[in-house]
Image (cartoon, rainbow, N blue to C red; front, side, top):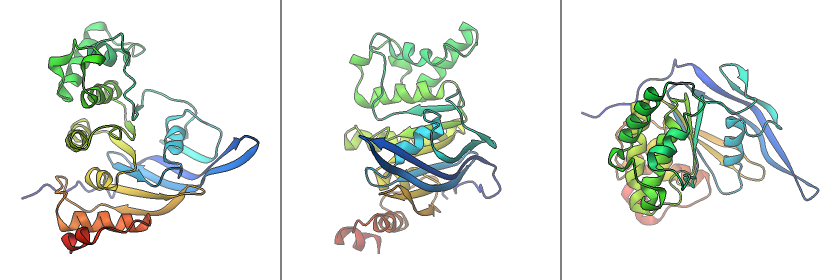
Length: 269
């Protein structure tokens, strides 16, 4: 018997993107990056955003994080417009961005410096989150001593240590080799379920989106706009080779204008 995804049909929409547009001034030329983007994210949901390069995925994530407030429309958390970053939103980038002069433990602890928590509680939170990502035995390791996958685990622990309501993921596994990426997809699914965090993932990898997400927002470029929103009605523990998984992946690839190989079509049939 497999575990089904929890029913979130009545869950609260904690994040609302309402008719969002974004225009950049590039060398005196107006470039429309996003147009009329609207969707909501329910509490506890894992949403993936997929699309070709240049469709505005990372731009949208910056608006949600509060790094850019010059845009049209509204980005709202709990009904209030996002005006700046705060501890309720943690982010993991494609580049782990660890501080090389701090150990793994020190890098995670750096996220708690403004938390106001007692030192003993901060130390306990750091230990708990290093254990959560499987690095409790590497607390004293320097970034140069860690593999790419291990460094990304530290970055995930650092993003989660403040117990944010939202975990924003900007191609967090994109720079890793294929095998490490698959392993960390499993770990990321486990970690998000364990923490109960609402997650928003930006990725080019459709397989990754289908494997991790409850819902997938497909963007098309020039300007970035929503092509479709797909509900992922698959079991929580997903088999990448299952026909239902492959059919959904190929359906999304088709929306993106990518034709699956004949072998993939035969496997999914």
